[in-house]
Each structure stands twice: as C-alpha cells, then as structure tokens.
Image (tube, rainbow, N blue to C red; front, top):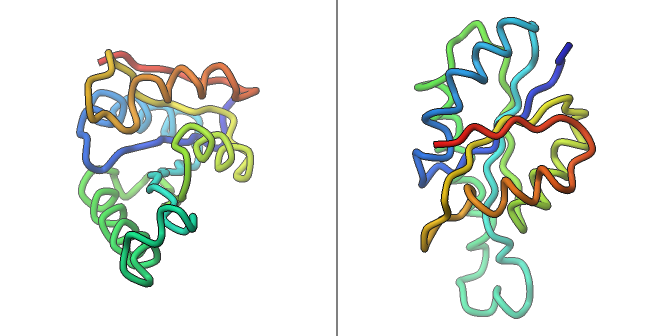
Length: 142
C-alpha cells in the first residue's frame, strides 16, 4: 500500500518524533516501505538574512545538521528499515511538501501538538502539510 514514507523531524525537539517513530517503523515493516527522514534548516542564503552571518555559515550548518541526522537515524531507527537522510533548507512546511513530491512519498507521518513559543516543526506546519499535500498524511497527536 505504501512504498515511500516521509518522516519530518526537528532534531531540536524530541516531540517531533518521539511518539511518531514507533508507528513509522511499524508502517515501514508492514508495507516493506522505504523511510525518508527529513529535517529542515532555515535558508541563510537569502541576501537579507545572509549578511548577518559569516561566509559559508549556511553550508556548514547543513553539513552539521546532516551529521546529526545520521547519528539520529543510527540511534533510533532499526537496521532492517531502509532509510534515506534528507536535509532541506527553507520554510518548513513547503520543504516537507517539496521533498515528499520529489521522492514520490505515498504517506507523510508527522507529529502535531499545541504549538508553543519556539516550536519549529510541530503545530502549524502539520496543519499546512495536511492542507497542501495531495496524498495521505498521518498526524500523530502528542
């Protein structure tokens, strides 16, 4: 039923994956689906924003985030689940949808909860993904 499942995570907020990950692993195993884990970092390449940061800050941030994502996968995803690591740059919900379309995801599974100040991935982004993605989205409430 599902071949490619996308799991958006915010590596700085455990709430973006802690309750979702067991379901994601179960779905991947049940359908022999590939898991694509995406995390989104802000786009520091914009001229207005980029001028406030040292040169190459954005690329270094992406490299560091990629390293952290690989560590996250190694620690939390069993070896029998085929995983692709993806670091995207930009607006969170737009990048989740773009990546999902790019990889041909049949399903996005993501967390949602009442947003609090400082939340980056959960909350309003889940709502926007549900509204704008043209395939199935499973939102797991915390």
